[in-house]
Length: 267
Image (cartoon, rainbow, N blue to C red; front, side, top):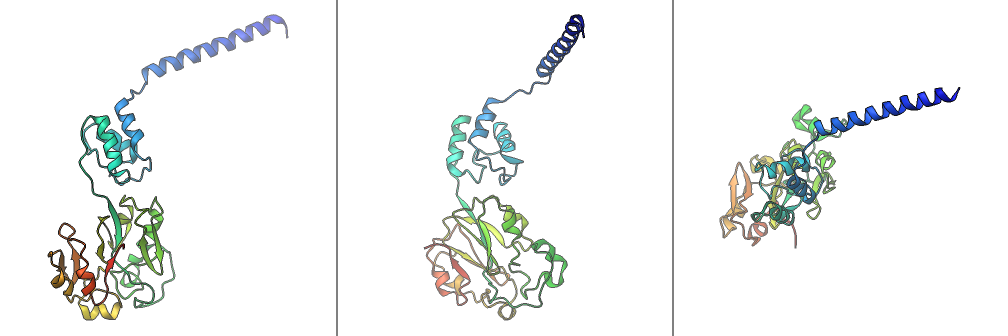
């Protein structure tokens, strides 16, 4: 190969490189995505878990919604009040106080407590048991199935199955709501973190039936309702519920419950 051929090849390669560079430069200008600095600042304050607990597609979606006035500043359940305050500073406003919440499983029927109708052998996914007789092997078809679908979707490793029942780690839980959404029995709800007592049963059968199905189920005696000095305990569909707006954490309901269905969540 002579010197002229080498020069020609270099010119051709250089021309191609120059053309590609110019093309990419023009494309970068034409297709440039404008970055909203305020949106980027808000995104930098969000935890980055992308759990979806805020109702938006990840932290970027929430940041965009906040900047555009489509979501509240304190919408992130994971970041809580601290993150809300930082975002408020960016947005030039004040964040309203938020109440920390935690997931709670309204069932405490461990393996030795719940009566069984049959042995189940199949897919270990609570959602699949809606296709089997009675919605699962337990006699109480409103109790925890114990296959841990809620645990599998928790991005914070805050819920585990212990002796046949899902249990929430209060300190790890960020109230993202994924376990609430996935539970086919609708046993999980978000309650105030500072709530000291909760009714660990969702059975709506009459007391006589519940007693046959579960040793630790609510029998509808209503002693908890009568003992509450703040009218915070209600009795609906043969099951007790607590109105946390009225509850003062006195513990009178838990003390009177003969089945110890009302759990003390912390000391």
